[in-house]
Amino acid sequence: MDRYHEMVIFRGLQGCRSLSMSADRAGVAVTTLVRAIDRLESRLKARLIIRTTQGIAFTAAGERFLADAIRILDEVERSESSARGMPSVVEGRLNVIVPELFSSYVYPEIISEYSRQHPEVTVFTRFSDQYPAILEDGIDIALHVGSLPSSTLIARQVGHVKTHVCGSPSYLGSYGEPQIPAQLRTHRLIATQGHCEDIHWVFQFAGQPLSFKATSQLRCATAQAAINASCQGAGLLSGPSFALHSYLDTGKLQRTLGSFELPAAPIHLVYREGRRASLRVRSFVDYTVSALRAHPALQLVAN
Image (tube, rainbow, N blue to C red; front, side, top):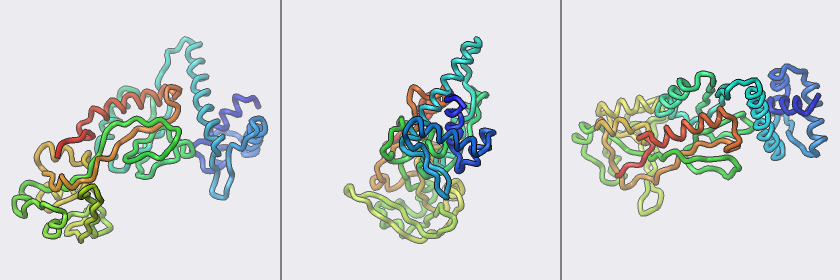
């Protein structure tokens, strides 16, 4: 087996939790795959993967080699297309991970327009609030809210998110607007965690976190259900600014306790390889960065 095919087999480990899964994907026997990895490790004089009872994991050297293998094999495919006189086509599969709430807000319109512009790209999106192990999990691009862990990945900031407490004009007209978080105890509160009736909202005062805990009067299984209930005057809710933006913009909801809100959290698009990334990754990153930076739901507004 030549070095090219060894590299193809090693790239196939990405996103697989076992050698047998990777062998099935590559269409080779497990023994063939194991021998290819052994040859790579022997030639490179470095351990590339660790095999455990839970599956496989890349070492630091393995992560570097995987990133290079992906880039090199993409370049080979692009060179072959060029030699055949074919224009560079944005195609293939992209694995993207996005925070769960973005499944209902902002992201659907972004991905639908990207897919319209690039019909040859298949985008598989996973929704999770956990920061992924991008290489090990086979993720090409991640949208992340909050501070970033230290890594060699590329991160481009695309916006901000704040947490707002909101209620409908009719509700605030009837119950009054709270002036400090402690006054929330006299209000009807809506919980967005359907399995828990307890409220735990965090504010800040004089630069220090201020925790507020209470029992909700209404529990909703989804953020959208809570927003709908609040718009109808059922009470106050706490939610991310990008989910509440259109309701605040149209006046269906009003912010309260703005001076006690926590600082805005950054939103980043994270990926590997930078300018050396594959054409499909670069196309998705360029389009998404531009679209998210222009999206009003991700921009900061005055209190």
